[in-house]
Length: 189
Image 1 (cartoon, helix red, strand yellow):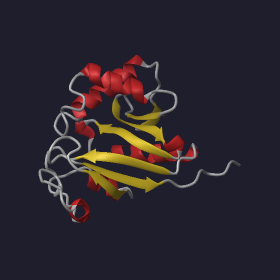
Image 2 (tube, one colour):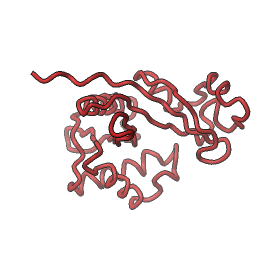
Image 3 (tube, helix red, strand yellow):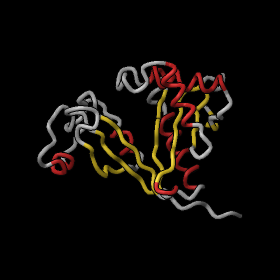
Image 4 (cartoon, helix red, strand yellow):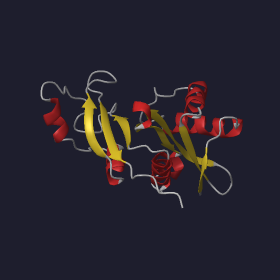
């Protein structure tokens, strides 16, 4: 496997990346990119010059996963969006490699923090399918993974929970915010 930049003019790569979004989110968030056209628009947005999009490609040229980063706060912070791995290739280090490659690329650009939102629309955590008011922060402090929510993956990569938006996707469907400080860029030389 190798990590490459997802180039804006590469129609085959865009189609593979879009197919990954549709297939990869079908079970966890089917409303995210329900059609290939919706996903192609997301890929086009991710490949804009001010953003970063990286793909993990297998030896046969098949895209195994991809990740995007977009600047916020004048490039001091970046949002990780999206991250997807082909369902048949999960739990093989592809997601980890993509996150680490994105962190390195953003650090080289002078980014200080990488953040993400990871929705719980299926009740996979202790904060899903419940009314978080009142006492939102107390409930967040007691956050538990009940059935394989992605926040645990990000925690293993050093991301910390920094907040939550209750009902972001409808009642009982919050968005969990996580962030990580990036290392300073390597000095030239």
